[in-house]
Amino acid sequence: MADYVGMGAQLAGNALRFGWFSSVNWLMDRESARLGHLPRYKPMRPVPSRDEMFGELRKLLVADAALVRDGVLPPASDEPGGLREHLSRLRAMIADLPESVGRREAEDTRSATKLADPTGLPEYFTQDFHFQTGGYLSEDSAKLYDVQVETLFYGSAAAMRRAALMPIAEYMQARDQRYVSLVDVACGTGRFLRQVRLAYPAMRLKGLDLSSSYVREAERHLDGLRPVDWLTANAESIPLQNASQDIVTTVFLFHELPPDVRRTVAAEMARVLKPGGLLVFVDSLQMGDKPGWDGLLEAFPVRFHEPYYRQYAIDDLDGVFSGVGLEPVSMDLAFMSKVMTRRKS
Figure (cartoon, rainbow, N blue to C red):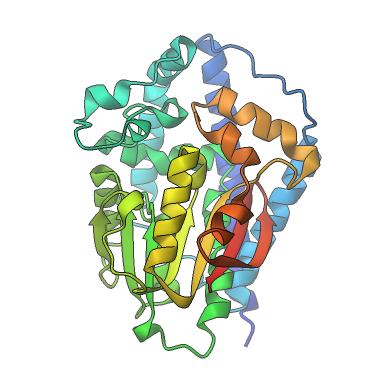
């Protein structure tokens, strides 16, 4: 039976998030200008109007609420920490702004190596993505990451991640979740894995990330739910057996990898998938996905430290995945993201 009450609650929550984070976005822009941040980059390619952009965002939030209506996603639940913790982290993000703006103006991206020990980590990982203090290596960075990314995307980041639940639901039809294994590669703070656990309480879940700080934050986000197996490891060498996983997911990873590493990680994900297994991939739009939006993609790596984004935006992902035996199933656009599903041949 369709859950229209749950859908309405989810939609109302999404609207509230949009309004709240739009206000935070405005505040951060105002404070950045007060601190002397240089004017925004003016792209050569076309950009959408504000009405068009927010129209697409509304479509995403309605589609997200439809996941609740259709039973793919349980109605929204409280997250660990609640409002008090959210406000505390918001204050910490604002307090960190002068330092991050200063690094942006100085093009300094090495705070990560000063705040944490980078020994044993690949060089491409030990820098300040998005000019965030500590990059992906510090405990403070892990605490601020979610509020930062939600502010950037006007409260839509969670909905973009949850768009990956629909292909998982289609794959799970007539399957017993107790015998299905899923690994989330580059699980970050565990926000997506939490949604998977809520939707599939008995599924065998693993979360893999290169940052021990982010893995600890992910553990906290899933506290009180059925345990997840956590792996602190490099996705270039996933510590799982060949053909051991039914589903591999990866969310917003590939645009932060050098091109050769992207291909290595794709091969590793294919290796651990069972024949017929499913890859669900979520990442940024690429050039041409929405031609009228290409200017946004052009501006993104200039406004934020994203050293591999330009090449990602033009990379042949179909060729990358087909080259390792992952055949296309579907591709959908979700606001600023794309959701690709592939099957292992």
